[in-house]
Length: 140
Ligand code: FES
Image (cartoon, rainbow, N blue to C red; front, side, top):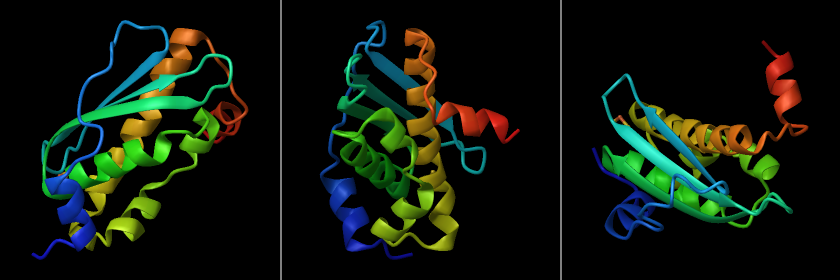
């Protein structure tokens, strides 16, 4: 299967690989796995507590090229966004940007899940209830 140029670019030059201090109050950590393939992704965000803007993001992914590219792109996209704006990033945006084929869609879902998990962790640490959390909870 041929990867798109953008996947190859992110795979060869992944942005924001690394680790933030998990113990910090300002850092949210999302650790998610894909049942389809066993790949694992960790995405971390550093949030300004006053503005709720994501000031930094790092990832580590043990997975396929598409998962690495998806998480690299996700860290680029969340930086500079508020947590509510970051919650609106969906895996379909990632699929479109990276031109992922159907068989690789779950790799982008992993990135969306990782963003949500990182934001959820940050909110829990900071006891934040945001407007975006209400409709999500009400939907169940
Ligand atoms: Fe499973 Fe890509 S093959 S995350």
